[in-house]
Length: 242
Image (cartoon, rainbow, N blue to C red; front, side):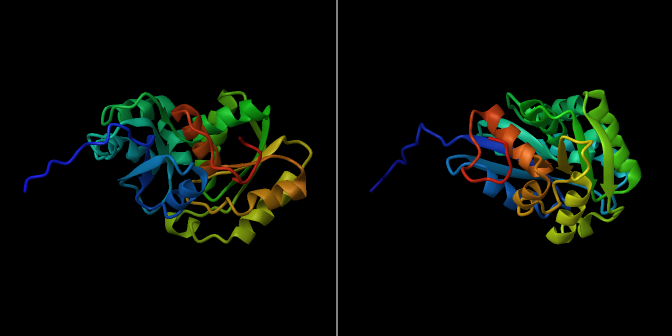
């Protein structure tokens, strides 16, 4: 007996996610943020164990190769690059260019463009920033945000140079830092920077404490990815983005 398989002409919506080699958090967060009907295909990009402006900039040389590893038959509505500080160092335009050199997609996003779009959506002009990284890395992000009209008058950093330690920072530590800095009246919202930082479980708690929106790298990236792909966030996600 000879059977031929029929091919299903209807595919679920597909999106792509380029994850840092060192990141242990973003994939599970995206499963919590993206709707059930979406298929998220993941590729990895080489990243250094230490986080400095130099190691972040080096990733630009590997993004096209990472993007080219998505399935050739995939129809990716949007591809997201999952690194906040890497985007600040490399630049959103160059990231979009290098990703599109490896894969065909109508949209490319990353946490910085996603954050700027989220701030515009919520009317946020002044952010308090919580970052795990050393000052030179955090300062670059603040400069990029300032160029887009978003001030960061208050910032806190755990000054951690090792990426592997970021995923192991306790939720309690992140929440305490966010609450302390967010209580300052001179900010509209708090941003928890880094896709490897565990943030989703603290957002509602911090918002309740400070009475202001709390954004995080993975939350804004998932939100922006959905918007560009014509999707909606999964119901019940933390925070005020919808």
